[in-house]
Image (cartoon, rainbow, N blue to C red):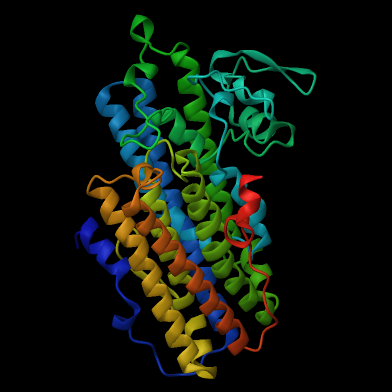
Amino acid sequence: MPAPSRAARLALVAAPLALLALPAAAVEKTEVLATYADIAKAGYEDSLATAKRLQEAVAALTSEASPQALAAAKAAWLQARVPYQQTEAFRFGNPVVDDWEGRVNAWPLDEGLIDYVEDGGATDENPYAGINVVASESFELNGETVDASEITPELLQQTLHEADGIEANVATGYHAIEFLLWGQDLNGTDHGAGARPWTDYAAGEACTGGHCDRRAEYLTAATDLLVSDLEEIVGAWGDAGAAREALMADPDAGVVAILTGMGSLSYGEQAGERMKLGLMLNDPEEEHDCFSDNTHNSHFYDGIGVRNVYTGRYVRVDGTVVSGPSVSELVAETDAQTDADLREALDRSVQALGEIKIAAEAGFSYDQMLARGSQAGEALIGGAVEALVEQTRAIERAVAALNLQPIAFEGSDSLDNPTAVFQ
């Protein structure tokens, strides 16, 4: 049977909840937790599979650079983001995920740590932002000389990543790879992504940017590390994995973990840090996928991920569906109206995020939406922020309906104390 088309998969993923029938039978919390863990495992398995395809594309690019090879690697990176972004709903409530996540999706990053940038990179706040590991076989870090003659996964993860405790020293993960494929986006709030030339990976005299062999080493090491990190988290959600066992140990705490992830991603992380903050500052550097101009997709699939978790339903990359007893059913058994309200709020936020995605794919890029004075952009982003905030309020009502203690979701100054953003 042929795999469904991209359009068919997107239709399955984005289908309004009203079209998805719910079973009437009562469910146990342990059944709900098992569904949640199964969806987590499936989402990370899809993330791993697409990362391995990215790894193959990177190998092709670094062995024989060409415009086509760079384009293929970029396409593979974009495809890899679709399942991964849907797994972000497993953050905030699961310590195993939270301890791991910063290795694969940390942002924003001071990219001058990694490779050449227009302004050299170093700042008063981060002197290491101008190291340029690609061009430096050794450098000083914390008063010690670091041997970087060989760029390895160990160097990236153990020495460079968040060096000196500075979170912007991101040396690993999707966004480091994104920068190495696209380069800096120097377009500000005008249309256009990064434009790294394929010759940055070319051999001999055709090499641009200098140190093409070391740039290829870095890209390879970062991609290999992404694959191994994803292998680790897939195992953590397996039958005897640490994340699954921790979740299943206490059914009540497990349900709290699910709702904590939903509310924290919806409110402080996505509505606040990823959307409202950039809109307030009119700053494209606050974009989540700022080098590739893929932010509209990252936002959309984050929204889908929250809805997946609540409804206990995930559409895999190959079009198959993982589903089972859900938090939605638990809430409906206690308060059908609260469940209906939350399902409706989830649909509204997915629709609002989808409108951003549609506009961006039609040529109105997220950068342009952030521009000062862009009424259309402010309406699109602001509308999605509002929908996500309302969604969070609906999640809070679901927490109350389940007779759980109120949950302190992740916050953001951009939502909770806007004046602090400009201080």
